[in-house]
Every structure is written in structure tokens, then in C-alpha cells.
Image 1 (tube, one colour):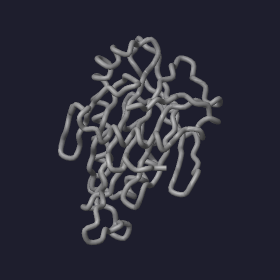
Image 2: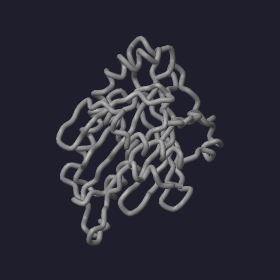
Image 3: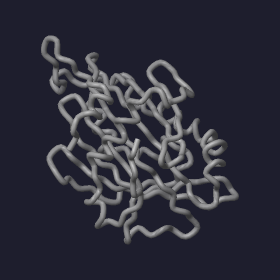
Length: 253
């Protein structure tokens, strides 16, 4: 699809990232149903996989519908998510919020650093990455994310720094008052592991971890519903949820 990314930046270069193109990448692949293979589903959650180019690495697509309202989901994903990572993923040993700033109204950028266990024969892994939240309108917000470098966050001895290629989430208010969370996620553990081994063997071993994250979301938001006063009730005939393909086709900057 012509998306070619530099995936490692210094701190001073993060401001040069074309966030509109990053959003377009996420929305385009979320909308492309034809490339995804359904791996697992339950009532309210679906998990898919696909190898996405130009990276040649396995991506996971996750679609969830939860009873919680849009603002409750926003609060978790933007304000609390890093603190919950060790509970969602048993391989994560530590998760740290490194920095946070708001470049514009309805926009937040936050930087996280996580440390993870791997197989006993391998170095442990760490990932340093940014997330950027932006509210699209009253009924949608988007998160985009990618690896970065920072001089004050060197690689810890005994660890190998992995990569997170462009990924993110589109979050949509539903007419029921609940929320749909559509996500792309991936990680490249780098090091000496050949890509084909990672895609065919190790990623299959990691799928239960991605499913556990989906179940954590469901448990986290079970029984919650946004108060009526904080919900933007649509007028007669107004459509709340626009598709990811419709959002991808418009200019998002």
C-alpha cells in the first residue's frame, strides 16, 4: 500500500513523524477485511492475524465491543494503560511511563518503556515507544503508536531492544452507549531470531497472550456504562459510528 516508514527516531525527531499518515496506515489496515485470518472469537471479541508489508511481520487485529462508554474507555487507554500491562501480559516484567505532553487540544503524546521475558535461551526484550491520542469527533478517537529511541533510555544490560512497527486503535461510541475498540498490534523481537521462525512459530505461541489482553478488556469494562449526561446523544437519523474505511479516506490532520 506504499506505506514506508522509518521506525526508529531520536527524541528530537519524534516531532517530524507524519501523524496523519500514521493514522491513515492504522485505519486502512483495520478496514481491509480481506487480508485477515480469524483465529479466535467469543461473544464480543474477535482476534485475527495477517503478515503486513513492507515489514513482513505478523500483525494482530482485535475487535472488541464493551458496555463501557467512550470516555471510560478513553480514561483507561490514555491515562491508565501502562500501569495495567503487567496484569494483562504475564511476559511483561516492568512497564514505565517515561514522559507525557499535550501538543494541542484533544491530543496527548505519551512514551512508555517495557521490559519482557522471553524463552530461556534468549536475551530478555525491551520496547521503547510512543502513543499519540487524538479525538476525531464526539464519537471517535484514535491512538497511534510506534517504536522510538531516546538518549536517556539506553538498552538495559542483558536485554535486546525490540521494535513495534506502526500500530494503534480506533475507538468508537456505539448507539447502545457501549464502545467498539478496533486495534492493530505487533512486535518484532529482533536479535538473532529469523523472521520466518518468528512469524511461523513464536508468534503462534504469543497468540494466547493477545487473547488474554482481549479478555482483560472485557473483564475491566464488564457491567460499566457511561452516565447518560456524558454521552453525546445523536439526533434523529444521525449516524454515530463511521467505518474505519470512511475515516481513512478523509484527511485526518
